[in-house]
Length: 64
Image 1 (cartoon, rainbow, N blue to C red):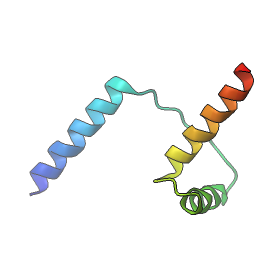
Image 2 (cartoon, rainbow, N blue to C red; image 1 turned 120 degrees about the vertical axis):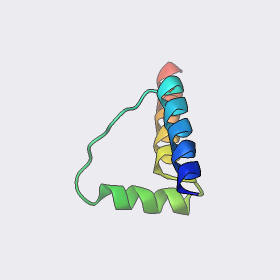
Image 3 (spheres, rainbow, N blue to C red; image 1 turned 90 degrees about the horizontal axis):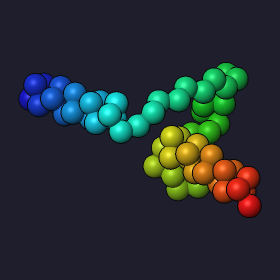
Image 4 (cartoon, rainbow, N blue to C red; image 1 turned 180 degrees about the vertical axis):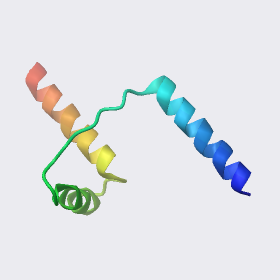
């Protein structure tokens, strides 16, 4: 069972490495919890989805 989990994680990590750029952001202590709470309240699956949506909305406004 553990081998299957490891294989799944390895596959996911490989896929992400090949298809996505990783961007690290640093926020003040406590902001992660605040962002997580807001994301959940607004119906996002996770903080990453919330942050990506915020970035996309801002980029769309800049383009206009």
